[in-house]
Amino acid sequence: MIGNYNRLSPAAIVMLGLSMTAGAVPLAYSAEAVHDSHWSGDLRVGANMDLIAEARDFGADMNRQVLDLREVEVSLESQINPWLYGMIFLTRPSDEDISVEEAAVIADLGRGFRLKAGKYRNEFGLLNTVHEPERPQVSLPLPVEEFLGEEQLRETAVTLGRLTDLGNGYRAGISGAVFNSDNDAAFDAGQSGDKAFGGKLYFGRQASDTAYQ
Image (tube, rainbow, N blue to C red; front, side):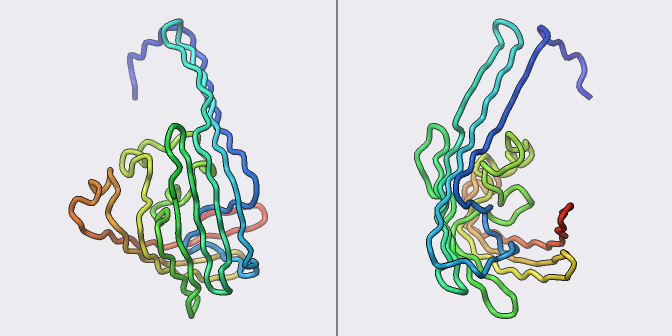
């Protein structure tokens, strides 16, 4: 409980996050994602813009108004051949240079296994694989930001996973990954030189009116 909160004056706070999308821009592709094997080999290009507007009024000395194009994202994706899929995501955050957020290939292996290699948003929790313009929150949750930093977990890695269709919309999966421990917040920018390892178990159901995982 927070006590003794003395507000200077009646206040109005408004925060709005807006994502505008053009083209076909799926979320970051995970080893457990459903793969559309009917895509053609043509290159698909998408664009996202993340706009945030904020207004606060705590009195004459504590007001704030912001309208900021927080991030622009461009995606390049292609089904290279029937078993190999490639993707590149380029981003330009506000007041920063353009950079490669993700660059990876995904290979369909035998017995339902899938291999993903490159630099990408690693499968840690639910939010880490979601790009900022698609994130449902206006801002990154504080525990995630404190543990992983604003960049979250985007390491050069190899992930092997398998997803099983259980019927009636139910799916279950498992994946394991080895990746560089270069994250500034969680791994001290890879000072130890050690690799990091991750594993994930997945269970979910998707129907016409509900979905959970």
